[in-house]
Image (cartoon, rainbow, N blue to C red; front, side, top):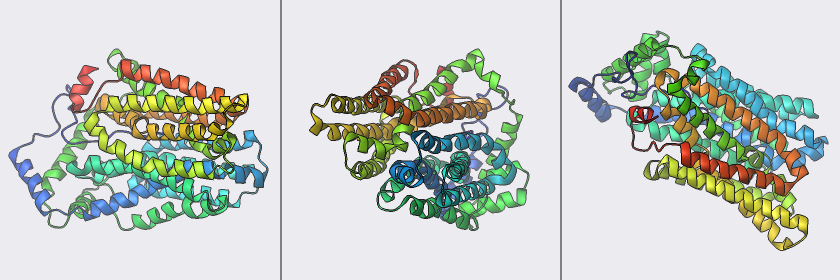
Length: 482
């Protein structure tokens, strides 16, 4: 599942209402001086603490997504669930996530970023308790839906909060922690799920990030940008001072934030139909197309049901494959983060698409050989190797880059609406793949993975033909080229 990104107000990147070509702020020597004083005298301790608290929500996101893979056999056996019933359990999280993501913007604007994170944690806690207590599919599905709704809110509010509290020079680095902690949470669920029961996993790994986040919210400030947006000036300045340190000169940054909010409020409100005007249709095709590419490769089917896939391939318990799956995500994600600004977005997407395509082809071939009863000793190695190649390739590019490109190719005044559209496409794709995966595997394991591999070929063509390289370009240059 990808990460939901919405509008991010960045100084120097925002445009005026008149022609969207002039920067928000006239960077006078005074502002430069203020910025230098902030760098010299400020403290980032509170900013780092606030980021650590916020990414507990990212960890919770990863745990929720990763929970179903190592627990499928145990849940089905204990609660006597059919394939259809477990497919509903596995996929209903995406329905909750879609609803949560769609409503998250209004929630975060109404009760603040901290309030939205607290509300999301409450839903996730309620969901995990329902899963822990479940004795049948109804309470199990209800809990899964609640956790989905919670992470849908997290998917919006966590990156927004981090972007809004971070100084400019740290913003990119801190916001990448969101994706990294999602992967980390997923890996934790994969690894612990192989050694503890599914109820214990729900009660511990599921609840822990939420409890830590709620406790941490008492010690961190609200987003100064949100406080300025709702007119709470005294609290705005207090929050900004806490984030920058008692000795920091915040006058220049305070002025920039307030002016950027005034400029944003002057921009026209774009509706969904505005996205289909001629000047925006290409960015829409690129962003929506990338979300379809991300989901059509099969990530949520493979991720949600990895353990069963390994068992079907011939591994005795599927635990060894699941452990390898969990371990490989973290270092590969780090590699992707390092390469992102060195090699460029487009080349990483091409490498990622080729790798996911090949991984699915190898896995499909393994199941074909098993069906034919030939080279059976190679089947587990091919299947596990193919799945691991898939997840490594996905983690290096197709996981996070579509959201990054979406945030770069749309002008500011339609970014929120475009984000909502791509979010809906992404969650719907996640639901379709995760719900249908078990049925497809029962129809034909080889055919299922070859189908995903075929989509991978189409994804390569799409990226090669339509996706622009945005590395090293300003937002204005990117949008002008489209």
